[in-house]
Structure formats: C-alpha cells, structure tokens
Amino acid sequence: MDNIGERIGELIESLGIKKVRFAERLKIDQSYVTQLTSGKRNPSERTISDICREFNVREEWLRNGSGEMFLDFTEDEFSKAAATLSNDAFVRSLIVEYWKLDEDSKRLFRDFIHRLSDNMRRQE
Image: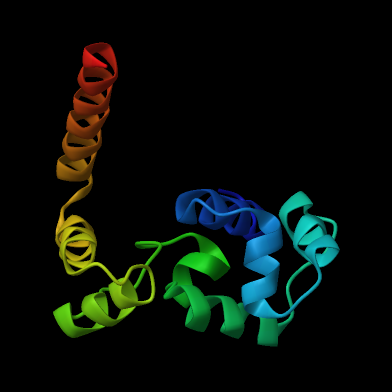
C-alpha cells in the first residue's frame, strides 16, 4: 500500500463493512470516506486518531503501512468487543477464539466453514 487512502480502503475491506458504516462509526460523511479512499483527500490528524481508536488500528500501519494493521487485544478486550457483536455466549466465544488465531489458521477455519456450509446446502 502506497498511501494512507489505500490503507483506509484495505481496513474497510478487512472489517467487512461498507463505507457508510465506517463513516457512521467515525461520525463523518460517507463522501469524505470516498475522498480518502480515492486519494483525493488526506485524513486530518483527528480522523487518523478516530480511526485508530474506533477500529483498534495501529497508527504506524495507518500512516506508513509498517507492521500489523490491528493492535493486539488482551483476552478481556476481545471479550468486550465480541459482546458488542452478539448476545449469544457461544457466538461471543467463537469470535474471541477466532481473533486469537494466526492468519493461516483463520484461513483454514474459513475454508472449513465454507465446506461445512456447502455440505449442509447439498443435504437440504
């Protein structure tokens, strides 16, 4: 990634959300997000700070692309974040355990879920 706008676009994609949701969480206009991701504008210092805080992004990665995208969570922080996503204890545990996996393990898990889903659809 050569510029901060591309990294913001990568972040949005990684989060699996739409630009409008990203903008809502930062309390900014969607058009501003589009301008950022297209490289037409650079984010303000406040926007950089808000992105890092709201999405647990490493500022060094956002600014220059070095290191990992996300800050490391403690298990308690994982649990708190998962609680905002679901009221189901099993789902929360699944989310927390998934976040702890390394990238190769996450890929294997996703592949497993896709195969399971495909098999279930064939049985219906």
